Amino acid sequence: MVRCSSMPFSGYEATDLSGFAERVLGKESTLLAELRVRQRLGEQLNYPRSRRAFASSFYFVRYGFYRHNFIVGARSGPDETFWAGLVQNLVEELGGFVSPTHNALYRHFLEEAGVKCDARLRQPVFAARFNRRWENYCRKAPFVQALAGIAVYEILDQPDYALLLEVVKKAGVGPKGLQFFEVHAHARHFELFEGSMQQLWKHRQGRRALVGAARFVNDTQRMMWTGLLSHLERTCKGLPRTPNSP
Image (cartoon, rainbow, N blue to C red; front, side, top):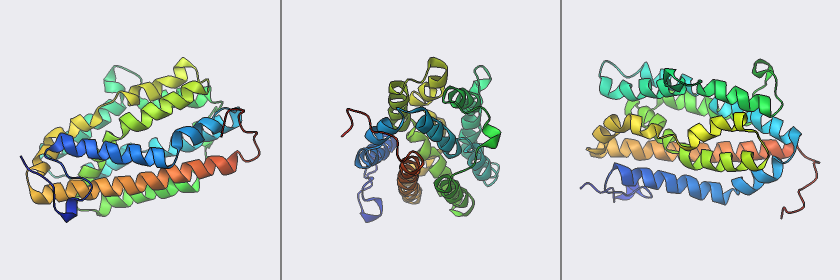
């Protein structure tokens, strides 16, 4: 067994790839708790105006992520070990050709939230920064680290979307609008990259790339969640607090 125990791997020590993924999950869960994402979103989404604001702004966080897959894929060369996971990830985004695409499911959520046309939405500043940071990383980071970034980001589906599903369900979003969150709460997209990530894990430099990607993802998630919550609180300033909120 390989163990990441020296300083470059601090915080992500693990004996195998599954252990590393657990470390990534733990970092995100800690971040969600530290920022009180569940409580703060729960307070905001009790009102139609704030549900519209959330649906409109989170749209830009997740709606264009396919672009990053394409950017990294264009750098991957002929070895299918590296681009296979990206292709499978995109097929999943298309609903596996048997279900509605994930973008179509998000449009259902927009409609449930009272947003009628996604073409007229304006990207908030925090989301523009999030997407610009990701695009720069996918273009400029060493290739294996950029690929690892996409893979590591997919680990976060379970904690992030399980939380969001709980919050939007409590806010009264109907079954059609919940489908997007249900699909992602049960997704296992990291497994699509397992072949290439296992190859990286075998070598010290590959493990360093995975840890570097995990740190980038964690930092970027902090920026995104902080920006999203602040944006909603500014947008919905003046709405009464719920009786049971702290």
